[in-house]
Amino acid sequence: MPPYDMHANAQALRLALTLTVAILLAPLGCEKSRNAGAGAGDGVAPGPGAVRSIGVAFETLQTEFWVAAFDKLKADCAAKGITMLEGVADGDAAKQFDQVRNFINRKVDGVIIVPKDGKTVIPMIKACNAANIPVVLYNRPADPTDARHTAVAPDNFAITRDTVAHLVSLARKTGKKQKAMILMGDLSDVNAIGRRDGFEAAIKEAGDGLEVVARVPTDWNQERALAGVQSAMQANPDIGLIFTSSDFMFPSIKSVLSNLGKWKRHGEPGHVILGGFDGDATAYQLLAEGYVDATGVQDVYWEAEKAIQVIFDAKAGRSLPGRIDDKGFAITQSNLKELEPRMWGAVVARKRK
Image 1 (cartoon, rainbow, N blue to C red):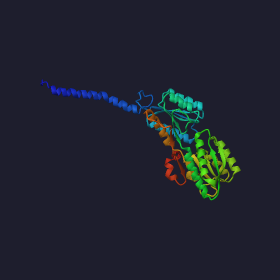
Image 2 (cartoon, rainbow, N blue to C red):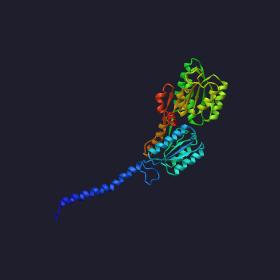
Image 3 (cartoon, rainbow, N blue to C red):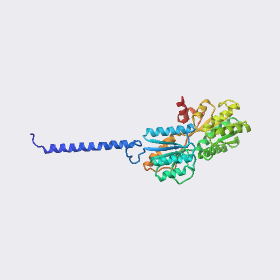
Image 4 (cartoon, rainbow, N blue to C red):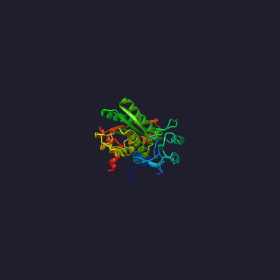
């Protein structure tokens, strides 16, 4: 038997202890890593600031804009390992409130809402506040309230003003005073108000070079839009500029102008200067074909990314702004090739092919 070596045995003991501690700590490190991206319902307790589930309540999915936004939120949640609970209210504010309450009862880490309007959403925000759940309003801000929330929304006024200013510049190039029409949205919707006001501001800046002869209420309804454009064109067949507060009403405009023989491309004799707002796939196609002159684009994908980031920031204890503006941009015949990669409608159109 070799002689007893106290120094060697002490070294062996220290090595054994080191290995034991390393083995004990290794699972803890793995558990922390799993918590950072864990999904709801996996049985792992979330760490501080973890976001495992988000409730998303949309007022409607009736337009490509809302579908694109909804799909982007879903894709981004999936990429981050977040469970997205879904609710679509089909224009019913009471139904939407029930959906939000369901999210709260399921203890989501955050709620994203596209409200029907700025008034009915306030009780929903307050319910989230009472449950200490961060809430983000996507694309539609609330009416003035002291309830805590963040709105991620387009600067409707500025985007519309810039878009209509471009239309006005085209009208001036015709060398004659043009008559104009605006299709207004539902004026209980703050977005519709901002777009109307942006239009009026651009027209005011145009001076006497333009005369607005028709302000058509549509309430975001295609049939009302169609009837309103028909009536306006009957009363003023020489209208030379039309702006719609949403691109989804372009089909109604096209129908009327086609029947009157006025559906002409940019640069063709008799072309009616056309502009819109949203940046949907129809607007992109009509821009590419030369029928539409400009549209104001909401940066849908940027808004979705910001909405989710707000919830992460809230869970991390960071201070949150009351509003984050989507500056958007006006896309025109002259900058279409440059800006189309940023236009959500162009992305949607390419996916269709």
